[in-house]
Amino acid sequence: MPRAMWSGAISFGLVNIPIKLFTAVSRKSVHFNQIDTRTGARIQYRKVSAADGEEVASEDIAKGYQLSSGEYVLVGDDELASLDPVATRSIDIEQFVDLDEIDPVYYDSAYYVAPDKAARKPYALLTQAMEQQNKVAIARFVMRSKQYLAALRPKDGVLVMSTMVYADELNDPQQLVDGEDVADTDVSDRELKMATQLIESLTEPFEPEKFEDTYRNEVLDLIDRKAAGEEVVATPAPVAEDKVVDLMAALEASVRDAKEARGRHPSAKAAGDESRAEGDGDSGRGKARKSSKASKAGKASKSSKAAPKRKSA
Image (cartoon, rainbow, N blue to C red; front, top):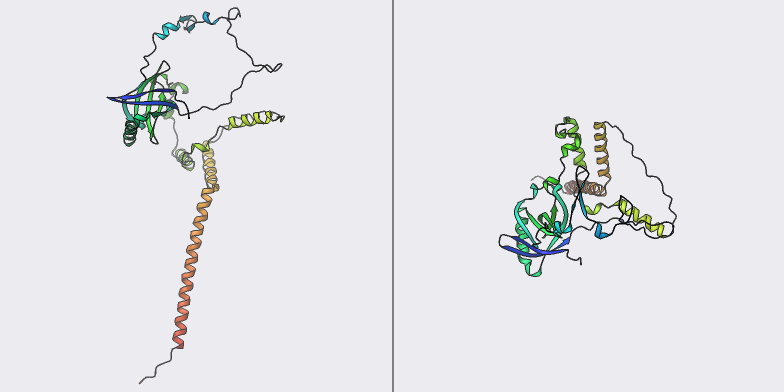
């Protein structure tokens, strides 16, 4: 059972719902320490002055903000503490918005919001009401002396809270392309059609379990092999080459490859086998019907031949 990292209440209007926050994502990476290869001991870090290289005691270290002139403005911990937001232990909902109004670029870290036992009913009521209306709550709260903007949204019967970045923290994308508007770039109808076909051929339901951190897996495999005493010979990684390609040729080849890959997929083969089986069944039933008709016709013919002719009176 994971430990709650924050406890408080969801507050909106006169409603107050006691809750606890649990991390929704556990970041996984491979961490290394710096080791002295002569002794096998870890490397220690010391805080030294850039002026004389001497080690500096903690009480002689202060926070400094560098100005454009290169000078530093020193700010004390007590001065910063006086500006800390009041820790109200409350997630204050300020408004509700439609889910599709929020660009995912604003989302940051995700947390599960779990209710206290006594607050399950109001929690469930809020969650179901938001889910029915497809609404997201925009709120503010303080955690560890920092104020956050957050979005609360229902997911599978529980509330998920995502901290958000502020609008002035987003970089202007137009600055990344020298001020030119990418939307004004001319594309032909044929290019657009091919690109659309490529997207359609690669479209399938999102299954997050299919995707793994292959780099982390390979690093851990390397560590296991070395820990087992295997001598590993490192090979240089291949260098990617920049190639100038024909856009239409690349699109056409990509669409063709995607269709072939989809045809080789087990689900596609199973569907094809099932379709052929149904066709064979229909054909067999058709043959059976024809055989039955022929048999009936043969029996009728024999019956007519065997019947005695009546004499006229």
